[in-house]
Image (cartoon, rainbow, N blue to C red; front, side):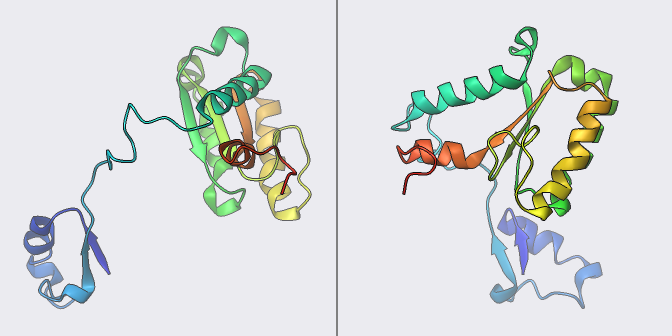
Length: 168
């Protein structure tokens, strides 16, 4: 399947001779047009979540726990993913560690699944711990403790549903 952002891209770009034997631009079964942009019915500045204030407070608590007070007004570099090696969170933390400019201008925030404090809490499963252990080493060896935060998406989802962690 070829994904394009416009019909023009489909027919003009993929009509180029380099694609001649690879794809037929007239075959609808091999193309999908997905326009770029945002669905404003979902992402509206006036739309509010039922638990928005609680979620905001939770995020502020986690950031206060991890980020130095003098740095809390800095923008964040935000990564949200599962704790899997292929997501390369380690590479992101290493890039942040070697860039003095990034460290001066922003904090790094990792939203993960599972652990509420993954930078300090040992993971119960080996796969997550294999991802987290080297990240902790980079944080420690580069003194990033006041510049990086990580917490669980599970906590946020539970708040969205109006429940505390552990409730069914």
